[in-house]
Length: 183
Image 1 (cartoon, rainbow, N blue to C red):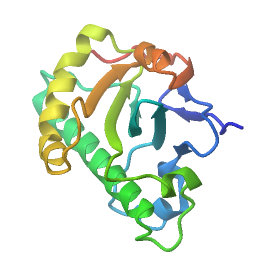
Image 2: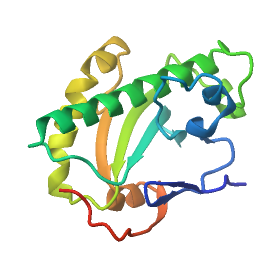
Image 3: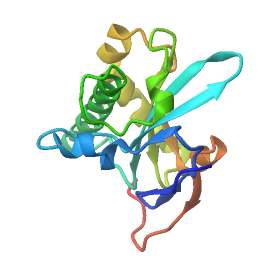
Image 4: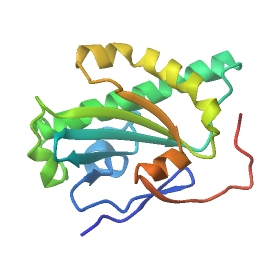
């Protein structure tokens, strides 16, 4: 069985194997505390037979400010950092049963958090590959303390475009808006 696809930022994510995706942004638990708490779109379990389970925290965007527009760019990076840290924290809190009401899929409750790996993945729709490095650098710097304090394996932070997301099996389709992507 698979989950229903998730539509975010002009991209169709999934479908994913049943129980592997937790649409945290639309969850009841997030709905009960969302006032003032920004959060990423969804959590996704990735399994490889020879490696620990990896929990991907995914945020999707259809555009980004230019790095040259420093104030807007810094605010964007801060917002994405907050979404990742909050989704990571809420996801772990749910796995640890810190919240009484949660619709967390069963496989998440069976995670060995001491050996699981984590990835914070920002996907930018319609973004040229060569425009990604400044975003990657800024986001990695903004999340440095989280990566270090949680001893997350390298590379813990990734900024990818829709083409790369398709290669990773994250998206099945992309819709184009009438607005050209920001550069």
